[in-house]
Image 1 (cartoon, rainbow, N blue to C red):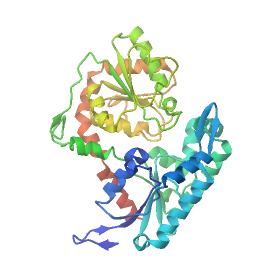
Image 2: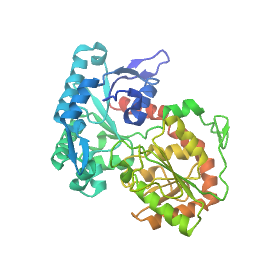
Image 3: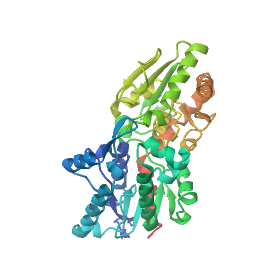
Length: 403
């Protein structure tokens, strides 16, 4: 370690990520936000990969096929992409003295094995997702890839884990899977919960932990009865994401609620570019499609309950975002969601793929003043905990404990 003028050690860290054409949007902004926060606690050198536009187009075209009636591409899982990433990373270490001077590298996902100590940070693995989906065949069909492609990627991932100095999981659920399903040595596994969007803090300021329901000088909106405005935000990066996040179940539950509980209940649905179900949006549904990140805080603020009963959700930062606005959530008792949503305190967790169970949970939360009081009171602490500053500080501790 190198000593700073204040006497505290600042690790020299390389940061490796396969960046999107607009780097700030990579991994829903999380990769960029972690990089920015790490710079406050470590000396960070960029050693990542950004595939040029024409090369990316060529890789996509080579690997584009019709599967299950859809035109889809598996370019990001291909051997060519793996080889490109490996060459780009190793070239960086061969030609960049600052990269060679790093003590360790933080790598987002399983890009490659590296010639110096490295840590992998991500929210899930092939083993975890296959297990959560029931079988390898079912998950391959959901991802619109062949089982052979998925198995090859799984083997690649396990090889990276084996060579890694450490694997940093975004949740305790994923950490357990790494040990129990992927066979990673327990001592190599660490947990660092992510933060919410950096733009969140910049746009609205930080919570003052002594300000009660005040966010950076801004009072959280009270949500008195009758509460009727449901919100679903399911950002769609793949064709299966709306189903994976349980959007179809929420729409079905809304119909039951409007029929049997309160005909004034509405649902605002955000995420897909176009309406993802047959026909048109039903009565009571306001479909907004894809929205910029700047529009999301206002949606949390103007609704009464966030509902996203994901069938498969590796982490679910969106729940932390909603709770930081004092908005109760309904999620599923699966994956990492129970680490964010606490039944009876911040919302509810459903167990079955059943619109009746979901409708009952929604009705119960909407009528529970105690949960709304608790969510409002806990919002400052939620926002404080799910910060990238906290995540970066914990990540730096992982590096210093693994010299």
